[in-house]
Image (tube, rainbow, N blue to C red; front, side, top):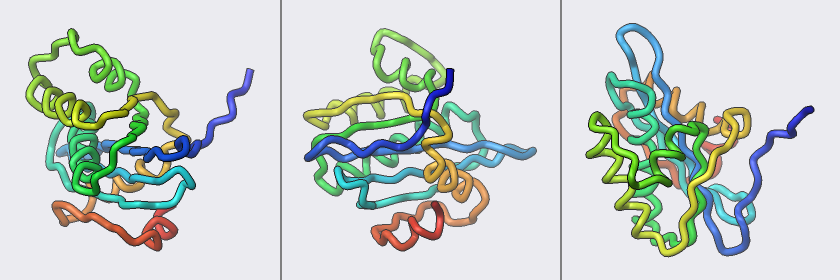
Length: 159
C-alpha cells in the first residue's frame, strides 16, 4: 500500500508551524529551522539557528521553542504544529511523560504551547517536511546563531 506524502495547508484562519532539528558530523553540529505559513500556504516567517552540539531530540525541541516564540511575537493564535519526530509528538501531547534530560526544555515548549488558544501538535512525514529539513541543516552548517526571515523569496531559494 502506498501513502501519498505531501504538505497540506492549514484550515481557514489557522497558521501552520513546521520545524525540524538536524544533527550530523563528528563532533556533532546541530541546527534548527522552521517556518510559519498561513491558510493559503503562503510564507509568514522562517528561521534557521545554529545550536551547537547536542542530541537530535534536543535540536528538535530547540527548533520548536524558537518557532513558538516567533509565532508569539507575530501574535498568531490558531496554530497547527507539525513535527517529523513521533517521539516529540508523544512528549508534547502526554504531559505525564517525564524525561529528566529534556525536562526544562520540554516544559518551556509545553508552556509556550499553552499560550496559544487553539493549538494542535501532529506528526508529518519527513518527506513532506523538506523545507524545514533544509533550514535545520543550514543552521547546523552556518556560523549565524539565529536568522529570521520575513521575506518569502528566501523560501523559493531553499525549497
